[in-house]
Length: 167
Image 1 (cartoon, rainbow, N blue to C red):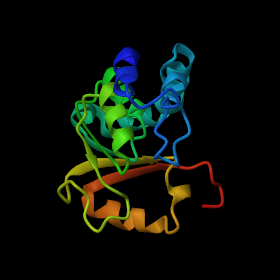
Image 2 (image 1 turned 45 degrees about the vertical axis):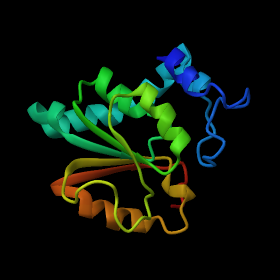
Image 3 (image 1 turned 120 degrees about the vertical axis):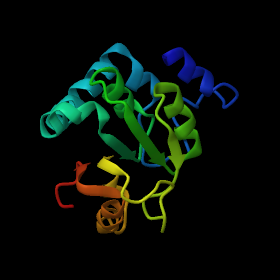
Image 4 (image 1 turned 120 degrees about the horizontal axis):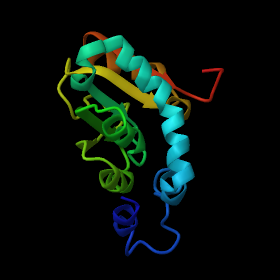
């Protein structure tokens, strides 16, 4: 809940409505979890989740999904609460962002960086790997796709979104 997420920031100072250590994530928790903010996030992610539901059909709820760069975990929350996905996982390099994300979702979230040699999950373990609004921050974004392939099951899918049309 928003109250739990705010508690995660206690003791960090008044400016701590976002993770200041995460230069790629400039949203505040208040923005994301307000009624209008959460509605906006649902509208943003619903078409992607609807596509995945159509693609995987009856086994959609059991699809194993890894969200790389979870931010504050709102996508994972929407996938679970609004779409009924049961096997969700996350990865992020920023400990304070992970702390906040854990208040938004029950999905396990591990600390890891896209460019790490090994990710904190077993290879060949996921049906879907998502990465939203992250690749534009990387010097070598193609490395993500190479690494992601190792963690997909045969026939798996990578879903990427970036505002950078040049990428």
